[in-house]
Length: 511
Image 1 (cartoon, rainbow, N blue to C red):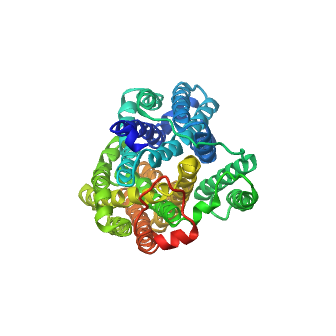
Image 2: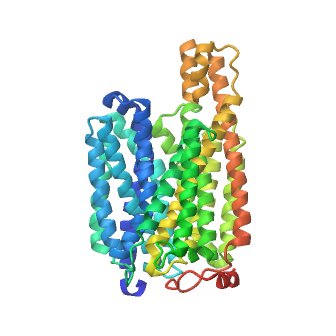
Image 3: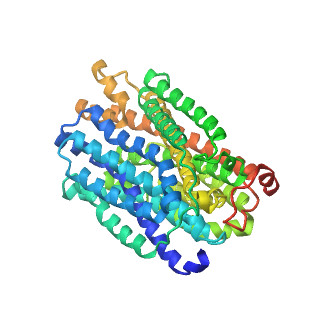
């Protein structure tokens, strides 16, 4: 298909980039608007939690069905419908006058995002050759990353000048342009024949992903021993086991489990999950560091994340050449080594460190991310046959998303433990200690109320201690990524993207 499309396929990538930006903006913007929304909608703490959770759960449950729909009915058609859903949901969120209406809009947004992401990824193996595919993957992945710092910058500006609903309205023009671009430039692609629809596999996969995602969210908020955490986690794992047994016995399985015997697909997916895990460590902690310790606002923290995006863009632009020159194993291993070194350097931050140190290590982290991510994703996506590119991309995206959610929950717990362990509460009244321990912003609020510079210094110092622990843990995971890349990733990625995932024997030979 790449020869038939010619230069048009790069215009099509532009359409996919816009779709990824629309989803990426929504991930980062909501947190900025929550305080204003709580006042305007009269939302309780539980409702505020569901503002986030409703999106995440529908997103987790919807990705595999989205991949199936794309394979059966056409990925371009599904992407166009997804953009319409996402745009309409953005309008619902912006115009919501009650917490319930906003939660419904957020769930609809999650559905649109679930339809967009795997469909976007599934088109790349079909449209591009092995030589060009890493560049296309890097462009789409880079767009999603670019949205993380741009979201707070745009959101901060809008919140300073308009009402909170404006942060959702910015999705609408992006969706409109993406819809027109997809309509004009994106080719249709789907499986040449549609087999029997595996309803049982679809239901089981949705139940497993939703339950495990909810359990991970609860684990980060209530603790890993809480009943509300253990029940959905164990229930999700049980549903996953039943799903595997069902798929093995099904004459027309939803997911061909032989896919996981491919060294390319499995190693690329696992490495992408490790990347997501470390990425959440950076994106979760650094905005808090910039605001609580350096005293910036949300917009300023977004601007200070731009060095990471700059490093990422440089890395993505060089990744395919590095992979061709050194091989994917070395390229991905070097990327992980660089991001691990950057994270360990970041873990030397102290309360007196400024923007300079943060800019240096986040830029180096972004560079390592840019080297590793496109090549690791290319290994996974390049193993997919055109017949199953949609569901295969959805499985890859589901695993990486669940890993990212798990990373956010685990690293959030690590940050809280490090922060609370570094606090000096001797001079804090007993009634205020809970607020200080709850978060760095709560601690600074108490320090202002008590007019205690010493408590403010203690809170900032304790947070930086927790930040350093999180970055050190993330750096150690980066070293695990180096080990996995050099021992597991194939030395080369096959030349023919139309070939299905390799058998176990073939994978062993390739590796």
